[in-house]
Length: 259
Image 1 (spheres, rainbow, N blue to C red):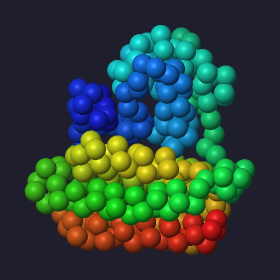
Image 2: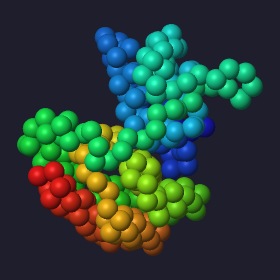
Image 3: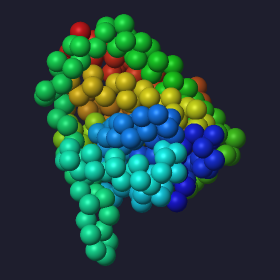
């Protein structure tokens, strides 16, 4: 299985990679390796990179992605199990399975958002406004050049199908993250993929603090579809413009609902 990690790790990055959770993982420094593993894996689970009910990759794959020993991964799993994020199932077909139900937007996170410096929130939105439209542009340009093949497009369409029509707020938040990561993956750039993963991390608490409204979900679905169509048509300018509109609408909603 191809993994989504920055190129310097030595693991290949390609549009056919199936594991979006790996987009949220990167090698950690030896000093605080345990804490960093727990943080990254927990974040990947919360953002839906590893959805509820699915098994995490084997220890050896996680160790390679994070640049740590399997012993450190096992220690991190103990912490994740204690927090109720995963459980380990024995026997045939066993493994470590994600348990944590998605967080409910609009509940219990407003205080966390209030604690974030306003300048930090504005900076996160500005960063997204630059990075995500750029990723959409690059993906469409690759399609135009013939580098984004039909198999890669099928992966993008699957991500769109997953997020479209979901009305459960928590499930939508996770599926939305996966769609944006899939667009970044289609850009073919490991640096863009890492940047979009950082964007999704930065926005997570803000987006979880607001209620998800049916009109906004419908509008978001339409914009996601328009982004994919522009990529499929090999139209970089259109892909960038629609993603910019999508980012602007999300920013407007955040400004209105959490100030």
